[in-house]
Each structure stands twice: as C-alpha cells, then as structure tokens.
Image (cartoon, rainbow, N blue to C red):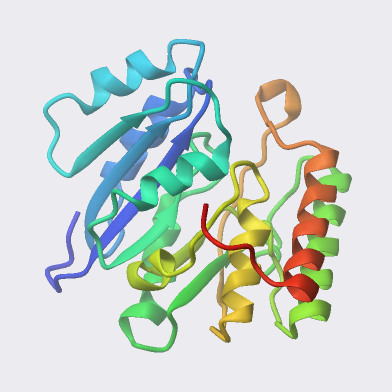
Length: 240
C-alpha cells in the first residue's frame, strides 16, 4: 500500500445501492499497489439495500479507512463533497463503487503529480480505446469533451471520466456545490476557469449495462452540458 516515498492518496468512494459490488471494489483497492500510502473514504449516500451494512462489516477495525453515511440519498456530487471534507492525503481521486474502473491505474495517474508536471490528472478511456457498453454513452462523452474544449480551450478526450485526480489543496479550493452527476462537469469547468491544465493518461474500463446497475441517464448528459455553458458564460455560483 506504500511506495515508501511519503505521498498519501485519498480515494473517495461514493456509494448508493451497490450491495453486489461494494465489497469487491474495496477489496481490490487494498490489494493493488497504487504507488502511495492509501486512505479510503467511503460515503454511503442513503442506500436502501444492504450496502451500508456491508460497508460497516468491511471497514470495521481497518486502519486508514473512513466511513460516512448520509441519512437519505442526496446524489453522487453530495457524497463526493462529503468525502472531500474528510480527505487527509496529498492527492485525492474518486472511485465509483462498481467494477467499471480499475484502481491499478492510479499508479500511472500519480506519476505526473509526483514528478511535478501536473496538479490535475484525468484517466481517459478514449486514449486507451476502451470498450463501451452503448454507443450513446460513448457519443455523449465525446460530445461533452468537445463542448468542454470549445468553451474552455482545453484539450481533453474524456471529460465525463470518473477518474479525476487532484492535489488535495487544489480540490479543496474548488467550493463545489453540485449534488448529482453534474459534479463532473462542474469540477472540470472550475479547473479550466482557474487556468489549471488537465493532464490525461490512458486507463482501463469495463462498462456495465443499465440492467447491471448503471445509474446515469440521458438527462444527466443534458444537465452536464448546461453546467458547462453556465460556468463558461455566467461563472461559478458562490458556496452554499
């Protein structure tokens, strides 16, 4: 769990109704060499299945594991914001509680930050030519990336990727307000408006279908587009 060079990675795991996969992804997190000391911050967002019980059973007695439980479902962005408030590491990243993304990729994502070449690193599924579950998801992601590049003069290939890694100080400075999936375009827009370059590295991806539990829907893409446009032309809202 450590490479001996003192860097600490805080992995924020927002969870909602993932009783089938949450233990597997947590086991995977602690088994891989991420190239840093590891802190796992699990935020259950008001799950109504057995997810919360499985989190408590898995986390009990473990060091460097922090848990938080929302009394009701508030959305992925709200869960991530709760997690950010608990970060004690030098670097932070979000890990969904399904098995679509592989935390073994954190090691490659950390390298540009460790080398002082980046403060923000995105894991790109496009650069690795990873498979996709449905063409509409792929095209939607490409559209969001193209709109981001057009509005903010960035050069990224995968705006909606879950794997967004930040130096912790940069992340805390963002004053994020989103509760739902629009967290992703919000943090991208704030990063671009702050003039912080986004570095990308290729990552692996194992997509799941809606039937297997994928939660994002077409209207979330419309919200994401609106967030990008709003932030570009009207700027970010103040903190709540």
